Length: 254
Image (cartoon, rainbow, N blue to C red; front, side, top):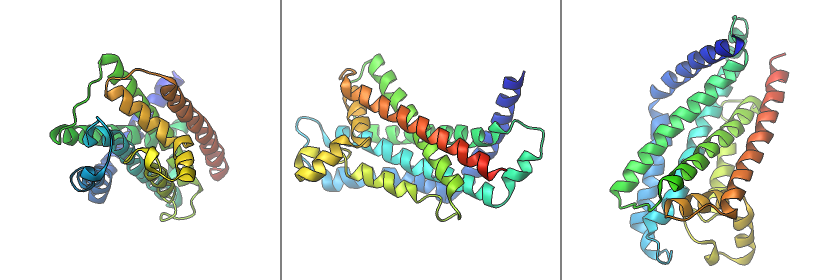
């Protein structure tokens, strides 16, 4: 009975956040339009200078753009959480007869819903630009599973920083770190072309196995050790930041 109560409260809370998000034009522009513009820029302006072997540049770049989209999307989750916290909205919810876990749960569910919509928009535009995946059903299932796991893991990073930040402006700073990791990875260019020290960092940070596994699966490859590394990275990030968020949340709500 308590679990059903929690699900109902989470649905209400997530609905509230989704309504606020859809009314924010700047959120839609940043989360959906910006990754699309980055994809257009790299494919049609820089793509001709990139050496990606037998793989067309649009096929090569889509996984990185998908993660770029996720990184942009979860930043707004952090901003919304910090806004609710600093304006006393969390305290008001705590005074109501609702499941306390549903307050954060609503933000997490809303983040997943909003990011799924954004990812679908990226896929649709990419198909229009010539993106042609070769994945079978299992490949699609695994690639989508890794994307959703990435959304969940990155969302809990956002939750943690949203709770820790002292101001609205500081809540989204962590997203710049995610962006930096994306640019110093195999998202936009093969790591073979990078200087040795940067290449080592690029190959062993979490974004590269995520990108490489999604790319391989969408282009007809099979799950391998890179896929396992991507899943383990996501689970490690998810576990660490979920525990961190819960600890910070309990401390700030005392």
